[in-house]
Each structure stands twice: as C-alpha cells, then as structure tokens.
Length: 373
Image 1: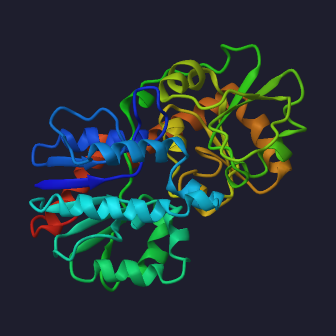
Image 2: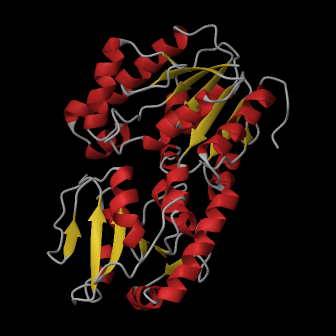
C-alpha cells in the first residue's frame, strides 16, 4: 500500500520534544511489511525506507512554523503578520497532494490538513486530536470539511473515545468514525521506579505552559508544596506569558530521554489539572506505562484515561487534590496504583507497532480489503 502521511509537526532531532509522537508513528508504519510510506512534514530524520514528500522551500517554512509554536498557536496569537500562515499552509498541502498522484491512500494528521485534498476519489484516514474539535466551531468549517470528504471513502480516527460522538454528529453520514489509540514507546514500560530514592517527595507536571493547560495547578498546589517535604517540578515550553511561583521548580522543555532517565524513576506521580480539550495526552499514557499514578482534573479527556482510585485520582477541588497527594505518597499505595496504571497502558495501548497495525487494518478496509478488527 502506497501511503502519503502528512503532518505539520515533527521533531527536528533527538532532543526536540515537539511532534515526537508523529515520529514514533512514522517509524512504526515504516516497519510494516505492506506499507510503502512517503511523509510530508517539517524537517527531521526519517527511516531509511521512507521517502520525504516535502520540498526544500516547504521544509524551511515548516521549520519556521514549528519554531513559532505551530499553526494553532499562531492563530491563537492573532497577530496581523501571522494571518496569512493558514493560507500558506493550505497552498503547500494542496501542492503536496498534486505532486503525489500515484499513492493509494492519504494518512492525514489533523482535520485542517484535509481541506485541500484533490478531487481524485482516493481514500483518506484522518486523525483527530481534541484541539481539532475547536476547528468545527469556526464558521463554514464543517461544511468545507464535508465537501472534501464527500467523494471518497474516509475514516476519521480520533485518539480517544470521548470524541466519537461530536465527530459522528459532524461526519457520521459520510465517513466512518473509528477511534485509534496511539502507541507507547517500550522504553516507558521498562522504567524501574523507587519513590524513596529521594529525600523529598517529587511530583511532576509536564505540559505546554498556557492558562488552560495549567488550569488551577498553582492555585491548588500553593498550600501543599511550600513545605520541605514535597516538591513540584514543572516541565514544558512557555507558550503564554505567565508568572511562575518561586516554590515551583520550573525546568523548561524536557526531552523524553530526560524524563525517562532523570525524573520518572523517582517521582511520586504525574499531575495534570488542564482545562484544555484534549484527546489522550501522550505524556499521561507514557507516565502510566512507566508506573506513575496520575492526579488529574475531572474532565472527559482525563476520565477516559484515569481509573479513579485505581490508577490515579480525579479531583474537583483543592481539598481532594491535597488528599490525593497525601494518599499517593504512601509507598504501598503508590506502588499498587502504579502497577495498575502500567498494566492498563500495556493492555489498552501496547506499543507503536500495535498502533501501526491498527492503522494498516483501516488502510486495507478503505482500499477494499480486510475490515477493522
């Protein structure tokens, strides 16, 4: 099967945290015996068997887009100089589609990248993250996407079940909606944890720094993290100007390698109090695969991942949050929750090779072969 995969996110090298899940997706699909893969994406190392479908001009423009925080970030900024970026992106995507007339199927990451699909009838698999659902609120966007899908076989693949209902309402009459979970790198499953190896209890928050992504993290944590017995370590790029309290240990963006070797093995758990509409945050899955319990805000994206009082705790207020911290700092409780989290991640998501098999089953169905199992 000749597949053209398109993404506006891709890590430029091994130390780049951005778009790492797309690199894992590409690597796994490249290992599939029945896939001949071409990739249109920002510059970065591709497997030897994968062909780049990006021109030099496109690579330079996409590299600048990545360094600016991505297309969604530029749109949120609302600066006049960035208003043409979405149009430029759509023009480049349209050109990429036209340059690859011999492919069998399109694998498109994110709804907006499907807008300039050519009227060639070729099938498409379109992945959807939680942030994509905001796109459907824009005037005429749903109609434009439906117009693109109308004359081809399409499977829309959100990475979490909670997105199925709104996507079914928008496209269910013209496309199949089939959730596909991303995989998890085996390195996370191999982490050996010991929360007593440090003199203080360390808790981690790994997120882009925006008001919605942080949620009430600072507000709820203030009274619980100013003593000597516990530390909050925050990782992620600063995407909105905000003041970080002096009792928070802020490290900036961290690579997966740093998290896996330096931080996850001795942390009590991962905290995410986001109010942001997400699919399945990959860092939560990786933390659970590593055996870390999760403390999360009570929202659909988190409730679909965290089994409350089994693999983590869902919190509605500061009091519940403080109690969760205390409970999970007990060594036996922490170990029990962490083992349950790891077993669940392995059972539900497996590895990226498992994810690639989920995608290739859909490719075959779209091309008239085997169905989705």
